[in-house]
Length: 194
Ligand SMILES: Cc1cc2nc3c(=O)[nH]c(=O)nc-3n(C[C@H](O)[C@H](O)[C@H](O)COP(=O)(O)O)c2cc1C
Image (tube, rainbow, N blue to C red):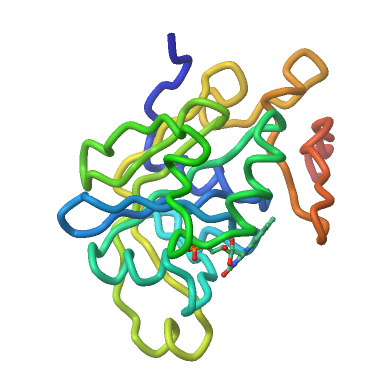
């Protein structure tokens, strides 16, 4: 039974505001091909409408599929998916069907049909590609408008992440480089400025 609940689009930027490593999912226009890769470089760029940016190298199979379909998914893995995240970021869907190899269970996004992962993940965002040929070609940066989002209510609720010692397995992971990650850890609350 999934603990995922829809996230208000006004809060979608908070899902990646803290810089988690994400999984970018994609599929061909006819849905017959699916793919997944890891991306450490993503960020929100607008709150309303919710827009994000993610760097996706032009040589990846993911880029090819995203250009063909005009959409992509951003799935946010939890600690339990650390090995899996590193693995799907270390091979190309051109050589291996990663969905088959790793037995990935996904559901089709209701808005755009992109594959979305809940098992092993703590949130997802369904995104429509905003075509920006210059930034795509020159900087490998793809912009997307978030059209739907959901998160595991055990760790994200009322528009906030709730990382604590009771849900360490559900913390997001952050890439330090060369397969080393740090999990989100404890929340530090800043005092209200006077
Ligand atoms: C932890 C991690 C983070 C990564 N971050 C990015 C990234 O931000 N942008 C990118 O283009 N590639 C990144 N990569 C590399 C891609 O995931 C990798 O090239 C992948 O094999 C592409 O798969 P595809 O050809 O099936 O699309 C990362 C890899 C790992 C392991």
